Image 1: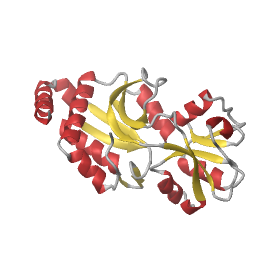
Image 2 (image 1 turned 45 degrees about the horizontal axis):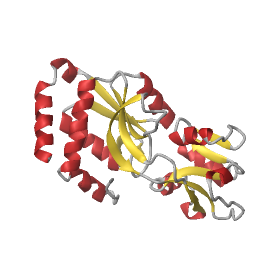
Image 3 (image 1 turned 30 degrees about the vertical axis):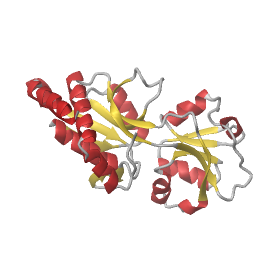
Image 4 (image 1 turned 135 degrees about the vertical axis):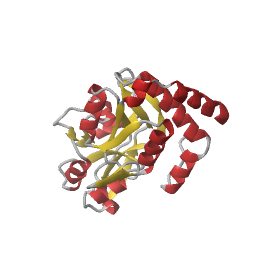
Length: 253
């Protein structure tokens, strides 16, 4: 299978037009350790940054990776040609808004609260409506909570950046934060807070958990196909597994 993928990628690279090769591409994301880590005045790092950098090298694109707040990255990917975005949760609402290149990683989603909040008891998402829940603006979690009947400024509060999300929780301006199994400890530490004070109180069972690389609808489709094959090749020959081992993360299914 790997040889077939490699051959297809070689053929596509050889057939790649001069015009497409002259194009520049941007991969946008957010600060989401250990998947994507922002460093002031330095290049970003992280497991999926390593993967995207390898994919750019594999497909010989003239491209760069930019880290912004999620809302800005999302807007850029929605409106700017030749823009790719990661790590994007895939949903029915987003399906026709982007081209989907491939799955990068899998996470599980949770509602989290301070350990001192023994009054918070959640057995299903309806129970959470009795509390104030924090989320990130333009994150799929915001859409999910709105669809479940949460009301902005009543029991749903959205933030543009993760430090604001966690400071609101730790200062008890919100009761719960929507997070996932991978990044919450890193986010809290980066906000200057103590992650040992937090507990995961409820796993959200019906929430999208696969993180994707996606592209704006106006992005060159030839490039998208090339990236799809490149990602398949990286997964097939063991290089994906090597990156995950480096960052002590489990392989996706």
